[in-house]
Image 1 (cartoon, helix red, strand yellow):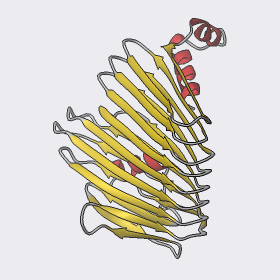
Image 2 (cartoon, rainbow, N blue to C red; image 1 turned 135 degrees about the vertical axis):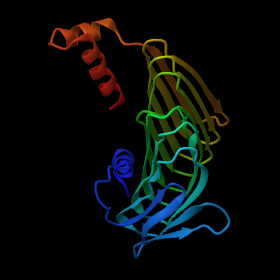
Image 3 (cartoon, helix red, strand yellow; image 1 turned 180 degrees about the horizontal axis):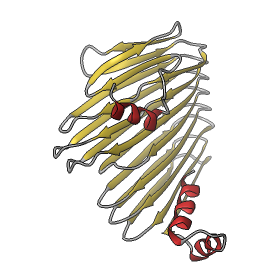
Length: 305
């Protein structure tokens, strides 16, 4: 692993050394290092690129790291990872992809992650995306997440696009069972000519199920963002989605939420706010000794925290 690859791993997975527990490192299209534990097994797929992560029922306080790094120009790949989380397990899964593109050809990683979360299991899923490199080739990341939540289970998903990604289409599909809970927190930053699209779609089929989707984003330069969310309440349930965006310079954000209640006791709410940073916020920070650029940076960091 060279210095650039190490820096990418630090950015996307906070890894400064080999992690404890189970892990699988993928570098430039190849699985380079792997560790399994008594309770967590990682198996290479035989029919397509990717891995199966199998977590035994009752597993507690363990983690899985599956970061992906691309440091070659022109490398394009699509990877399929499936997670099977046993009943009553409580685990953390850290994923993410970093692309360093030093050349003039497009580099792309498309990751399709499918979660099968067993009864009363709890999963915290962290996914970060990051791009760097002085080359003119595009850095493209298209993550797709498919979630199936069994009775009483919970998945908390924290997804972040840090910077440097030229184009991304972020797709999330969820099916939520009885008394199951899905929580998603998304944070995105775009600049220059970058484009980001978010597409959430959740079927709330379970009685007393709940969903909470919150997306926060900042669009700088001439970048464009689109936000789509669709929640179907098909049983007695509570669903909430929220899109908050800050515009800077010539950035553009479009939001199109959709709520469909197919049951008398489905309670669904959406909130959206798009606009520039309030002038009084900047003035207040400038009175504390910051210049305008520093004040804007502090506001943006607080907004995306």
